[in-house]
Amino acid sequence: MKITKPADGKTAYNKNSVIGRKILSIDEVEVVHMEVGPGKTLPLHKTPVEVFFYILEGKGEIEIGDERAVVEPDTLVESPKYIPHALHNPGTETFRLLVVKTPRPA
Image (cartoon, rainbow, N blue to C red):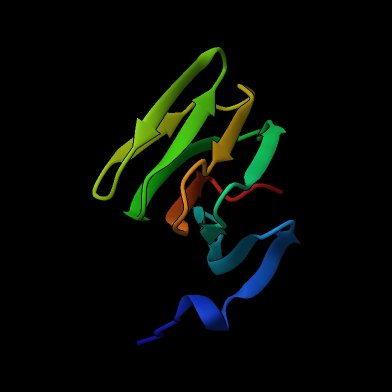
């Protein structure tokens, strides 16, 4: 059994109070724990694989293509490959979520 806590994950992104740590990376899937600080944004970008977001804590906004929605804990949001997406935290508390990419990007 392998147990990984977000703090033990390899840093995948750390800029402007947005921190992403890989907590699983195998051929079939990559899981990144994201923390988006208050008032911060993970800028619009594309991935060559399917992505879904699972909200753990806080309230934030997810932008996919020309859509933007407010999301809260225990919510899953799908994001198709090659469609630009971004994470926004307009609030005053940390917004935490899992980003799951399948299959793992090359």
